[in-house]
Image 1 (cartoon, rainbow, N blue to C red):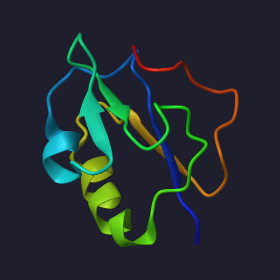
Image 2: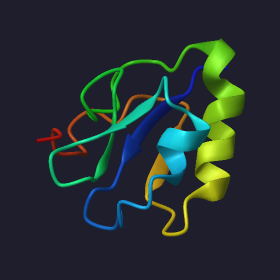
Image 3: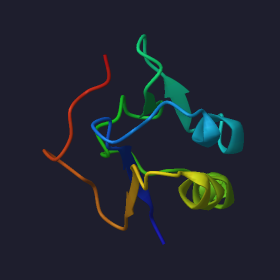
Image 4: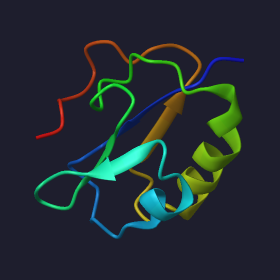
Length: 82
C-alpha cells in the first residue's frame, strides 16, 4: 500500500528522533526542524516500500506526533521546508 508523509513544522520540536530512525526519509532545515527529503515536505511523493518500517519507527518515536502519514498524497496541505 502506498504511503505519503509530511512533518508539521509548527509542532516539530527539533528533537532529532525521526532522522535517527529514518535518515533516508527525514533531514533538518536551518532551524533544526525536520522535513521530508523525498519531496521537500510536500507530502506528494510516495515513500519507497523498503522504507515503510523506518517511517513507522519515526512516527512512533515522534514526541509531538508531528509526522503525518497517509495512503494518498497531501497535496496543498503543507508548507515547503526552508
